[in-house]
Image (tube, rainbow, N blue to C red; front, side, top):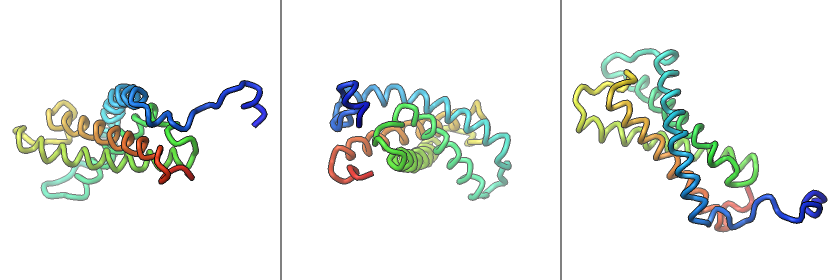
Length: 158
């Protein structure tokens, strides 16, 4: 409290998440970083997650989960202080991870309709690129929705 009086300003205003300009900058910064983090997550998939056999749903879900949460972890560089607390940071990362997972899954099913030779396990395949893009967009859009909702009374106590 003394530092606040000494410097004469608040670190962050309550209405910063309601600013469209701030949200656009966070989306423009967070999405490319999420893409890079999703690519690194896919490298992690290739090294650690075992290659699935045909019809192995668990390995597919593990790979998509790694992509979704890797993309959301990268995007958190832009969204880390959206809710001003450790609990709020974990909450927005967790919800953005669910958005990344959902975006990756939706992108997989949409991409598998239009792209031949469906293989999400090889880095240079078009479907993998579509899934990473879906995870990055999904995690950042969900984080922006949480940031907008945080200006409401729902998340003020976090």
